[in-house]
Image (tube, rainbow, N blue to C red; front, top):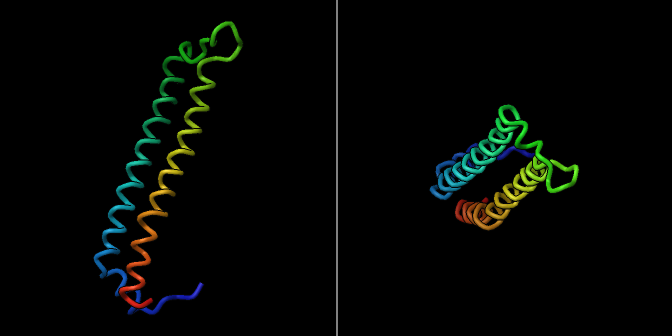
Length: 105
């Protein structure tokens, strides 16, 4: 990958839209990460402290309640990824294009 000239890097870093991009991207990233961490830790703590609740069978079958909950956590991770990607495609790409246009890069 080619290295950008220092002047271009400085111009991008000084641009207000770049600061907005960094702030909004960071806020969303931390928010989604914190949410997923809380869900995952909650599931882990439930396994550690109340195995019987997660081991309870669903109906008369052999599948326990923990299996669909674990599957739901995997689906939640995919959903969170989709939320971030959608936001990146809508907001971040537009800000990057605006910065490039305004600094002439």
